[in-house]
Amino acid sequence: MGPDEWRLLRDVRLTALDRAGGYLDGERAAEATAPPAYWRDLLATSTVWQAARGEETVGLVQYRSEDGIGFLSGLWVEPHDRSRGLARRLVATVIAHSREQGDSELRAYVAPANRPVVRVLRSVGARPTGRLRIRAGTPHGPRLEVHVEHERNGAPRGGSRS
Ligand SMILES: CC(C)(COP(=O)(O)OP(=O)(O)OC[C@H]1O[C@@H](n2cnc3c(N)ncnc32)[C@H](O)[C@@H]1OP(=O)(O)O)[C@@H](O)C(=O)NCCC(=O)NCCS
Image (cartoon, rainbow, N blue to C red; front, side, top):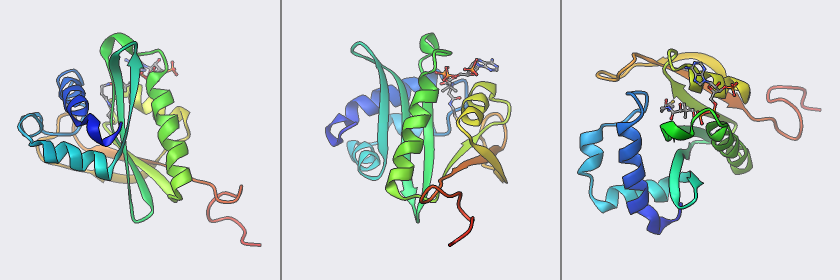
């Protein structure tokens, strides 16, 4: 999404929070009343991809990079469009982008009970790091940190230097 698309991002994001069954992190009330600057800033500091069906946005995912580590968040697919591989394609796009950006790894945070997203992330090679993220008031309990480690020069990270 481009910098001018903040209204679309806000509308889709609020719809996503309504239809995510508590699996999306974020405070709906705060986001619903956030000023335009919040959404412009989000688009300036993150990269956002959407999945479209015709004119309608039916999927969303966000990426940002901090200190050489990529973070995937906000993954959502409209209920009617699920189980068609849209999330897997969105995640694969973010993984490729993160690698191109030079990140050492891409991290995401998931509720272990969220079987669809666990399945999607596992299928693209994401593995648990062993860390948990605990935030008060988050439905479905602590989030499990998972990551995809990017290979460098064709060799797995941490491999031989020769
Ligand atoms: C998680 C989510 C993005 C997946 O979107 P999607 O487009 O349906 O995902 P995909 O079609 O790419 O893959 C879904 C996988 O989950 C599987 N799946 C679907 N429902 C399932 C269930 N109830 N239990 C177990 N697996 C399930 C599908 O079979 C598929 O796996 P497969 O291709 O190996 O068969 C979507 O369910 C969603 O928006 N959920 C609410 C928000 C959310 O949880 N976001 C993630 C926050 S970390």
